[in-house]
Length: 168
Image (cartoon, rainbow, N blue to C red; front, side, top):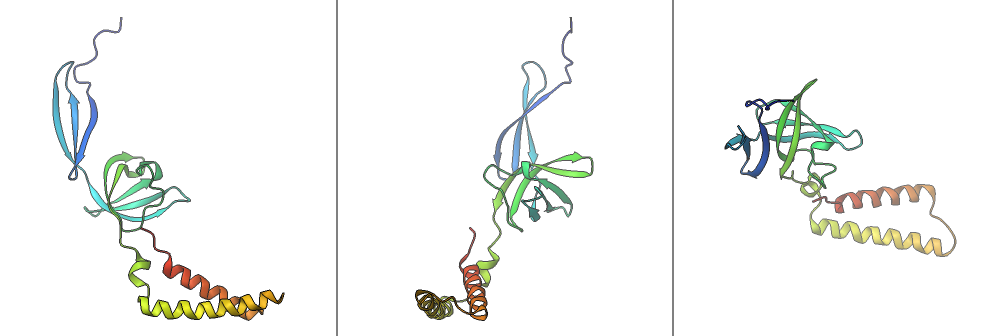
């Protein structure tokens, strides 16, 4: 016979997250429940490498916290640098590890902030159209553009694509 489980044994279940706090139901005994309110630490993504599967959070308290990919919310594969997050912390072998990360706010897009004005972009696109028309006419005559022209065209296409590529 195993006997009765110790009274000090407790089970903690997450309840609701709201406003940077997490409420827990704490089972202090067989039928005794009390609510404990825990403030969730917050910080910003310092960097994250999706290929390696980890990154770091710069906590608001100044401490760096290891961020494994498994701690990210479902559907988030590559969080943007500077994104505001809330998380819980466990002590790992090499320091603090973030768990149960919640995305609070995404960082502003660097591309969106630095891209040219629409009027300037319109002129660039019109010039690019002329270059593409010229290349297309040569291709209709079964001739590829010269190596130098191909490099210029590829460089311009990549630059324009980067200005249009804004991740939300």
